[in-house]
Amino acid sequence: MSTETTETIADAPSRTSNVPLATAGLLIGMLLSVLDQTVVAIALPDIAADLGGMDDISWIITAYVLASTATGALYGRVSDRFGRRAVFVTAVAGFVAGSALCGAARTMPQLIAARTLQGIGAGALFVLPTIALSELYPRRLRSRIQGFTGGVFALASVGGPLAGGAITDAWGWRWIFYVNLPLGLLSVVLTTLALRLPTPSAGGGIDVVGAVLLAATTVDLLLVAEWGGRTHPWTSGVILALIASFALLLMLFVWWESRAADPLLPLRLFTDPALRVVLPATALLGALLGGSIVYLPTYLQAAYDMGATEAGLALNPYVLTFMAVSALAGARIAAAGRFRPYMIAGAMVVVLGFALLSRIDPGTPYALLAVELAVLGAGFGLLMQNLVVIAQNAASPADLAATTSSTVSVRGLGLSLGVAIFGTLLARELQGHAPSPRTTATAIPDVLVWGVPTAIALVALMAILPRTVDQPTQVKSTV
Image 1 (cartoon, rainbow, N blue to C red):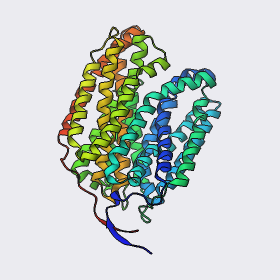
Image 2 (cartoon, rainbow, N blue to C red):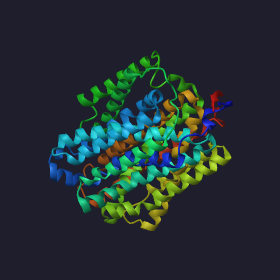
Image 3 (cartoon, rainbow, N blue to C red):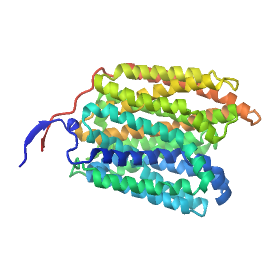
Image 4 (cartoon, rainbow, N blue to C red):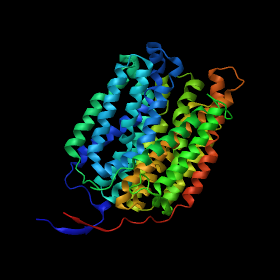
């Protein structure tokens, strides 16, 4: 017997899922996706010594980032069509297969190809859990639950080099990939058995043309940021051609999305005042995250003569504060229901964090640096996942997946751009100086100073965030 009730989809928790087990399965997948962005970096010298191909070594990381960033936005729409569980399990299976191939690679091209396959699977492993968790839990708990995902992101991002160093030292570089196999299979088993969510849409098609155009546009932009000013001069034919290609592909994508029957990225999302703020703010936040996550460990190694493992442990004030504030702020905001004051405060704390870090030098006591790292971590913890929650709360149930995947993908794109741009700035600072740990340690604060105006722009965006976010539309559901 069925009882017909009128309720908000976002407020209806799953009645058939085993929520704790499903949450664990989704978070394991999320952990793997972020971990494999950073865990490989520490093993690159060992990989190059074993496989050769030193000139192509950077593509081990670049291929993964390009593939995961370019495909992220597609998965939300695909899961609308085929269901969250089926698409997530398929993506994890692809990620696990790519990991096995990475571990078995005998040449550098084989490893790069396997990393690309890994990245294609990883594109779903942060996007889909973010969507599914918002459907597993009532709307009032979104901030709290997404706060925990922010902690997972911080732990995996900074813990990656630490884990990679330990695994490489103990068992060899191939095991940084093989260790994904049992974790990935555990994620598959848990989500297969425990996750039960209705398929949001049984009809409609997949916007393949839009997906191809968006992927090509994303790859062009990332290659411009990665190569411009380092691999190729900004005025070179390669960079100018990539910029022209990016502009053309972006226009084609917007044109196509305005006409597609089932667009990958519905342009109506940009008519919502909250989303018009959240999407650019998320890109800026991603860039700031990328610059800090990648170059702070380098600073610790150069300024304090730390090894990779020591530098990873020395970032604990940043990571632990990020995780704690993300979880506590999520719970607090969920209870208060007011985002804007917290978001403005978070952006201002990020400004303060970058301002403090831009003034450090090789003589700065670590105790003082630890406090400054904690300040930056607190700011990021206030902002990161709550921007996703604001976007989700502004979306109608039909657009929840597209909105979430767009927000998470924009953050990933911003993170990749931030790493590339900060890297270009660091290369510029080091020009004309003999390479040494001291010159690197002196240059990195001069690069981090660029985080201050970027974070000020983030404050300005948070200040124009709407005071209230529209509730999801009322729909009928059968219980």
